Structures are given as structure tokens and as C-alpha cells.
Length: 112
Length: 113
Image: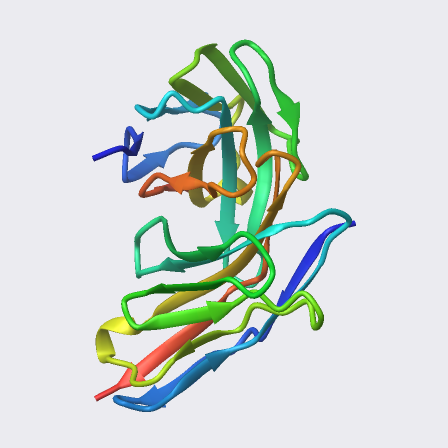
């Protein structure tokens, strides 16, 4: 079946450090790929997405590139801020949005 | 601004009570979902619905039921609340397109005492 694997963390970084959160997937069809972010006490918010191979999604300084050959969608940011502290979920969607699979989430803590 | 609204942010209920969690979306989405989120277990799908009056069991439906009488509203019902149902409950909706993604509500943190 479809699945998403991501590093579970927690990841602790100093402010202005570089961030990479790895995400790989397996899917029977051609998925769309997403990163969601969950701030403390809140629901999940869409951070970025990519719908076909080699697409790059970007938002708020975060980027991720859809790599079909390596079935990956790693999340990157060049300089993290304390306000980026949250849980990040990688996810995929197939079958007209009716089958949405989430990774386990990666908790990021950014220290001042 | 389009959104998914969950009726309560925090709820405290007693064991054995019947509990209703309400979710309303204003985006005319066909698909709606209920998840629970627990530390170390990630998001687990309880029930989902692709249309009015239809429902499908997710991965952990035991102890729950749902109702979707109108397209915009999807209710989660705990028939007889138990302490192991203490959790964060998340509602989401989406149109029938795989490239759209989910829109989530803010969540309801339910404590059963």
C-alpha cells in the first residue's frame, strides 16, 4: 500500500541553522506530495505542495522538490527561526484526494 | 477566507457520556475526514465521507460513529466516552482532486475523566 516515511526527530537547531527533514514515499499511483506544519495546540496547515516530478514547492522560506527517481520530497530551509518550531508532516495523495497518507511527523525545536 | 471550523477547542466530558464533535466547512468540499492525534502514534483516520449521507470506516472506528446529513457538516459521535478516547481530534475536508490537499480545522482537545 501507499506509505510515507520521514525522520521522526526531535530535531533541535540553533536559530539561523540550515534545516533538512527527509521524506520518502511509496505509492501505487502517481501521487501529489505535501508538507504540513502543526504549531503547538493547533491543527495542521498546508505548508507547500508539488504535483508532478521535478516540481518545487515553496513557502515561507521552505522548499521541497518532487524527486520521482528517488521517491523523495525532502523539506529544506536555509535559515530557521524560533517561530519555525513546530511538527512537520510529509504526506501524499492519490485517487482524487480520497486516499491521503501522512508520515509520523517530525518535531522541530529552534533555540535562540 | 475558506475554512474548516470545529465547534470546540477544548472539551471535558465524563466517562459514559455521549459526545458530539462538530465540523463545518464552507468550501463545498465533497470529502470530509475525522482523525485523532496522539503522541507517538501520529494521525489516525477514524471515519471519512465522500458525499452526503455516506460514510466509510477508517483505521480505528471502534467506539465512534459519524453523521453527514448535509454536505458542509460532518459530526463525530462518541457513543459512550471512555478515558482512552482522550485525544486531539482533527477534522479535514478536500475536493475530489489529489493535487489539492486537505484543509484542517484547528482541532478539538477532548479530555474524558
